[in-house]
Image (cartoon, rainbow, N blue to C red; front, side, top):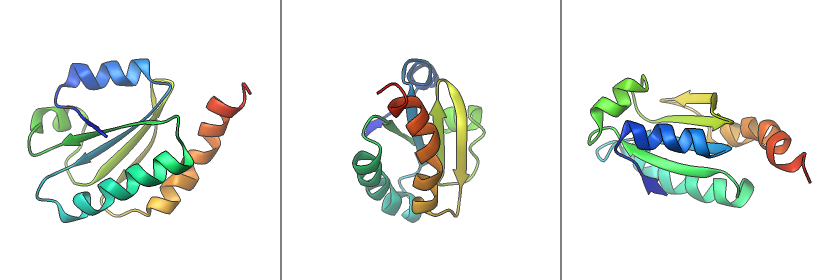
Length: 112
């Protein structure tokens, strides 16, 4: 999982990647540290074509504020440069993965 610290870098990833998952967390956020490896593993197994990046909001406060992230953790899912899903604070990883399934299949499996 790549860590980003710059808004331009994030915007470039959103523009270039057909599917991108952004996890906003913090070093001192216990929940963030627990879900980070789980989310990475679950996405790699179920949706291998999605890219995933991490942003530490304690290190990149301006970036998080510019993306309207004011509580942790937050997961944003982008398909074709559009934010499709956003989950904040308390959410189920399994429900998130289930919500990703349809747009992922339409984007990546429709051409096959």
